[in-house]
Image (cartoon, rainbow, N blue to C red; front, top):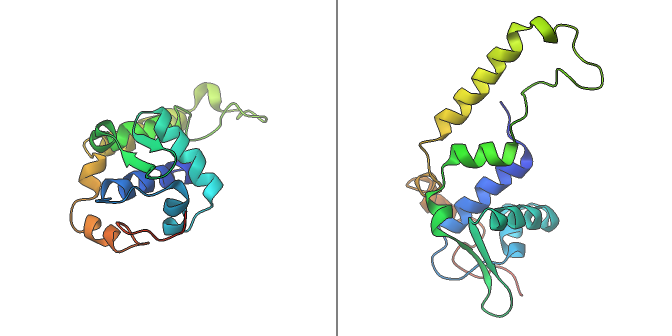
Length: 150
């Protein structure tokens, strides 16, 4: 299974915020540190804020912080939420598959998808940034220091 760029970026934003120690990074700073477009990062941050995982404060002294719910969130649950409940393959699309009424593959792919999510369920955002990942994240893109002018 392959994650969408949106889900991948959401997980990376959460990991980035999980290691933030002092300064609250802005969405622009997070985007720059991860070398991704600001507009895409802003959409991800808005979704994470809507889910209650990230708090965003505007103005001087503002920035992004990871909430307690964000720290303890299950990675499997997050991926399910962000990826949606769709099938791995589109059997009912514009050109429906002629095998869909008696296909064994579709069910097997659904079970494989659920096994993928289940393997991620025990992981939390906080567990993702334990050593060796956390210390590495601290050295990427100026985590803990201001990298851009506001």
